[in-house]
Amino acid sequence: MAQNNKIPVLMYHEVIGEMELADKLSYRMTPGYFMPIEKFETQVKLLADRDYKGIDFSSLPEKGDDGKYGIITFDDGWAGNFSRALPVLKKYGFKAVFFITVGFIGSEGYMGWGEVNKLLAEGMSIQSHGMTHRPLQTLGAKDILYELQESKRIIEKQTGQKVSAFSFPHGSFDDKILDSAARSGYRVVCSSELRPSYISSFNGRFSVIGRITMNSEIEHHTFIKLINFDRKVVFKEQFIKSSKNILKRTIGINNYRKLYRKYFNIETPDEIQ
Ligand SMILES: [Zn+2]
Image (cartoon, rainbow, N blue to C red):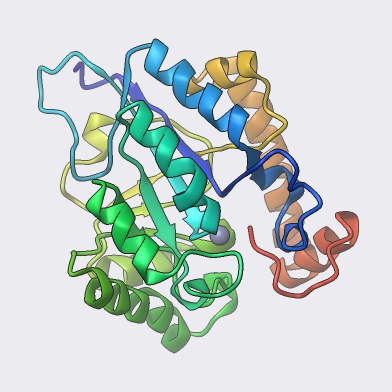
């Protein structure tokens, strides 16, 4: 693979069945993050039809490999990751990376450790999305280390596998947090910023990987443009995201979340992004 080939890294959350949009758990997260199973399967098929292979962070191609690669990731540890996404991934021979929030595992709507370990047995990668899903930038140094290190320790204990990647809850991080992640033994950290990765992005040193946020409103033609990092579509998505980030910085992340909950009629304080 040419060193400058772009690798799309996709960020999914939950995959749902057809009639579950009004499910009682759906208030917890941005509505668009609930991906209908049919759409998810079509997206994986679009990748497979274009000869993409779904890999994880540890199975990156060697120099000289001219294949096409994509990395599918899931955040939070939702139950449908196991019941719905796994059969699709297996059908197309795709690996994926599951970033789980340790404090959610075993609670209603999320996977249990049994399911997490079954994902692992199917060749999937289990990595960390922290303990409590709090935005790290709102925490003090001690709590940041707790989110990074305790989640890693528990996942490693429960799965018997090394954890080396972390996905930031709410996409929240800064230079100090990156430094703490590197010192906590992580090699790859994932944000929700839209920018391409390359084989050279995963060079064994500490890497910050951007991802393409998948939501149920993305049409198939836009999906194809996104995985190709089409300049126009990428610019549009980045513009929307940076506007949100400016708002977050201006009014503070907690006020932003309040506003966000109001906008989406999310009534509970424990919404997930
Ligand atoms: Zn999350």
